[in-house]
Each structure stands twice: as C-alpha cells, then as structure tokens.
Image (tube, rainbow, N blue to C red; front, side, top):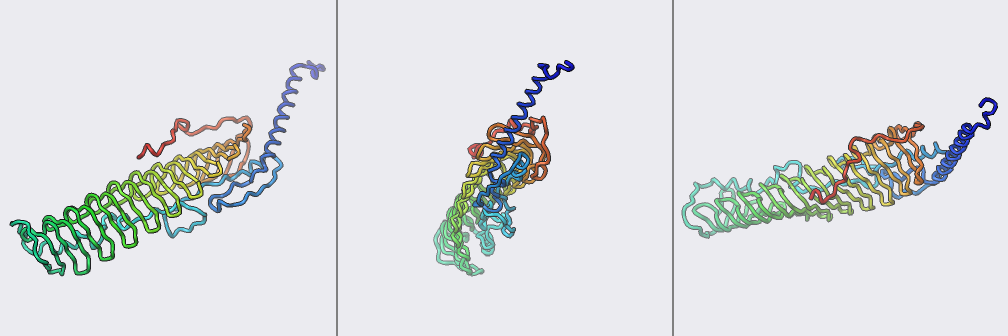
Length: 390
C-alpha cells in the first residue's frame, strides 16, 4: 500500500462507506427537522384537553428529542377523597354509596325492624298454642300498635304494626318477627319492600331512599349481598355484584356526566381488571388498585395516541410504549409519569435512536445500542377481556 494508499481498493471502500454513512445521518437530521413541526409538548391531560397546538421549529436532532419530553401522563385519579384539591379537568369520579353501602356494613338503619321490634318481643310470656286468628288492634307498652293475625300471643300471619314515631311494617309475620314478604317504612321516608327473615332483609328486595336513590337486588342479614342494581337522583347507576353490603366482584358503574366503568370491584373500590371511559372518548383498559391505575394497562386518546405499559398510582411507571397518532413511538422505561432510564425513540419511517432519559429529559445517546431489555414475560402478556371476568 504505502504511497499507493489513495488507490487501495480497501481504503476506497472505507471512504465510500463513510460517505454513505454521512449521507444517512444528514438525511436523518433532515427528517427529524421535518418532524420538529409537531407540537413540542403533547396536550397535558392534567390541565385541559382543549389546549391549542403551538408549532415551534427545532434545528437539530437533539432539540427534537428534548422537545418530546416529557410525554403527557393520563388523567390522574384522585384517591377517592371529595375534599382533595383537583387541578385537572376530568378526573375519575368517586362511586356513590347509599346508606347501605357505607364503610360500616353492620349499620342497615338505626331504626331498623330488628332493632325496634326487640322491645315488644318479650312483653308477655310466649304462647304458641292455638289456631291462627285475626284480632282487633293491640297496643304494646312501647306505644306500638299491631293489627293482624296471631297464634296464641305471637304475631303470626299477615299484620300491620305502626310505632309511636311513625315507622310502619306491613306484611307477613312468623313467631313475632317479620318473615316472608313485607314492607317497612322508616321515619325519614325511606322504605324497604321485599323478603324478610327474622326481622331482617333476606332474599330479594328493593330499598327506596327519600331522595330518590334506590337499590334493587339480593340481601343477606340486612346487607346487600349477591346481584343488585343501584340508582341515584343524579341518574348515576351501578349494576353488579355485592358482598356484605359493599360492591365486590364484577360491576358496571355510570356517572351522571357519562363516564363509565366496567370491571372488578373490591370493598367499594375499583380493584382488578376494568375499563374506564371518559365522556370525551379517552379510555383506559387495565388493572386497578384502590381506585387507581396500577399494573399493566392500555390508555387510549380520542386523537389516536395510546400508551401500553405499566402504571403505579395512576402514573406511567416501569416499562411502557407510547405511540403518537402520526406513527412516532417511544419505547422504554418510566418513573412517576416521565421517561426515566433507557428508551428508544422511533420515527414513522423506521429510524430510531436509543438513549438515556432522566425525569423526562434525554441526557445522552447510546451509540451502537439497538436493543432494550424488556421486563420478564413482557412479550408473553395477553391483554384480558371483560368477558373473562363476567
């Protein structure tokens, strides 16, 4: 080679490769500059979905990548606290609870049938002898008045009892207790109509509140238990499963503004797999814990964007893939809603670059890197369907 190096075929080939590589990088830079016409910051769901698109021109690749960070996070779900300060436009709403669905499942009503009937049960010595017969009105020492059928000195058969404070029961009795079908009016205007066993709601029945809210479904020992439907005065509604007075199992909830949730519940909270849809068309399909997005899920925007990845307390956290509606994509790691760690940015023409992000800002490129290590079993994951849980 020596002085003839400029004519060496090997050197000429290397020189051609350098020229080609230079042209590719130049073309890549031009493409990135072209994409810099895209909005530098995606609309932030925590502020306003109607935020206008502002176009800014970037002059190089690095500016382009920095302009894409941070990618906006989905709407944040409040921790179901009505007094919590909300700074975003559309949050996941708190499921409504009737008095029968409060945190203390042991409270059906303080003036319930089983409570107030105790004062009259032991007034006289129990006598179960004799045929069933209808008698005139009987006034108990408590002031309660009963008119109906008796066996001995026990209310048994059909009868009506009115208490001194205005509460009333009309229906079937057995052994001095409400048993069978009957209707009980509370003093505040609420009433329950349905099946009874030993002075408690057991079986199928409907509870109507004075404000219009109601529950229609299955009961066990004065608690909603089994399948049921609830309706509220503002037209919110729930249909699904209950356990010991609380929403638990599979259920569908619709809020007054049109938001809907279908999926699993536990202890009156969104828990397990479910689908939440906002009135503006945004949708999240994935796992929940304590009313927050936790685990793997897919978040869709109405303009075509989507995020498929891991969540922690309503924020992208772990590994995930964010796709724009123009074909661009970020694949990598996240921390508290922002790109953090190794990630790959891809253009819609297939060009890509691997880099390191910190708190939503790209820190450096990793030359020669082309692969990103995904979490174990990431590619084996099969996205569930609602039908699998019904």
